[in-house]
Length: 130
Image (cartoon, rainbow, N blue to C red; front, side):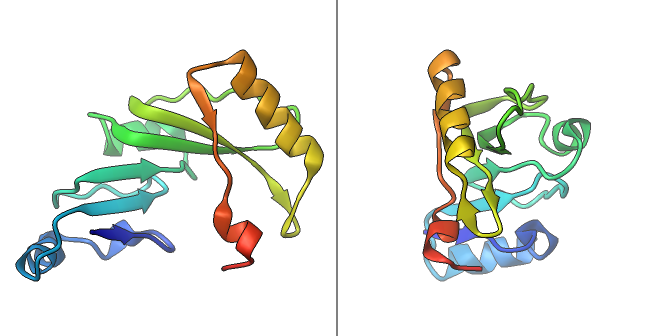
């Protein structure tokens, strides 16, 4: 399996790369995208954390994605996704590389009040990976 991530991986992903990955035996190709780029190359799993307007995400992914992830700070409400997703997540926003407890508590209260949503954390921030 391969997960394409970092920056916007769909800027570099195309049918040629898809064919090469399959040729060398990669069975599953997943991507972590911000939703701003459309691809015609096949993908097995799409995780989208929108960093652009919802109508742009919908235009690029009209059939939906496997998961949507939104970062939230205190007082930011539940998003209204334009794209269908099998799973939807909220992640507490970090400030200066530090998880603020009020953001975590806010996200926890949101997922408790909206059971369709799940909590996710940005593990790379806990680990200090950029």
